[in-house]
Length: 220
Image (cartoon, rainbow, N blue to C red; front, side, top):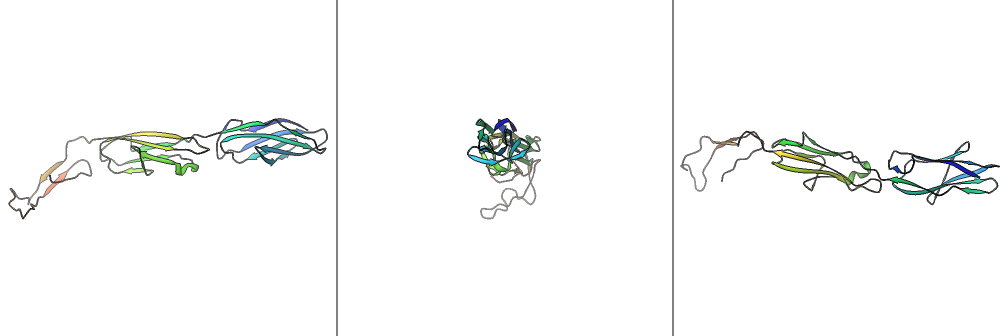
């Protein structure tokens, strides 16, 4: 037998894709008749599909790694021909992780923010994590009030055999609100000079206002 026109789609090296079909084909001819063609991937043998002199085998997916393969062609007289042992490589895929902070990466105190990581492959759902200032948080991270400061968000994955390690970062800056300090006013019936003191208690009534919510009033 004679083996020729070996073809692989996609060609090596390929990048891992769970939706990719990998197809290997070869032409096998003989001066009498071809009896059987087997495809070897590593130590595993697979039957082929014939169309004329072309013999094909397809795999719905291949994990990232290095494979050796060859075709084995046998004729009706018992003669066997093997194609050269060839290497086929499937490289790890790099996830296209996305990290978005809404309504923006620069806000004022009192602004609700949401940090969301997305585009994590289904194989890595448990391996994709969101961090704020190096502390893991839920994804998405919804914050009603973050104090003034700088917050580093990281969305990453440790990967697996098919996907590489990858990380993406966004910085959130929370600025103080312009417009002055909160205002506090004593309102009646707050007594003067402790005239209504009872034991160790003095009733005090105040009202406070600020452009930022929430704000707090306490007695020192």
